[in-house]
Length: 193
Image 1 (tube, rainbow, N blue to C red):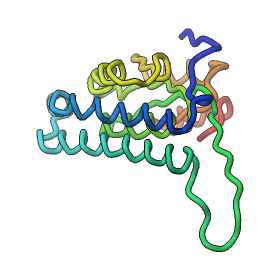
Image 2: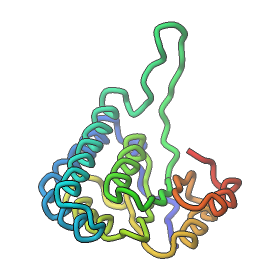
Image 3: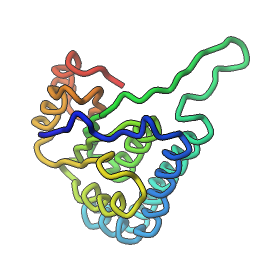
């Protein structure tokens, strides 16, 4: 795996610019909604109605994270009435995301949007059981105004790619869904999110 030390992140882009990129992804996914629902239906066996619902929820997640990014500057909501807190949202850099098999599009979009809202670049490993929705999402990424190189999708063996991500010096964190035994062997190499 070759990850350039200068992998683009959105850290220097203002939160409103990141919000605009996420809203653009949502709009582009809406335009490709039917194709994505058919892909989910044929790949996962979901009914067409449930597949369409997953696409709808994915669009809603992109819009939600775009709004959070714009309104909350990508940070966490404020503390309850009493007390105080200091929150300085800061991008980690390049984040690896190893996706679960359940809800392949929704899980991918939810995690991608959260990472991008904070200004991170993302390297995603799609579900090995249902990789096609993630690969078809590449068209959505290419048609949006998200800067090129901010999101990369790589395919292959989940354990081998997770090991490569965990051992790579540029990767600052990994979100991992898989076998605990495998995940625990990487936990000392990369900080958990």
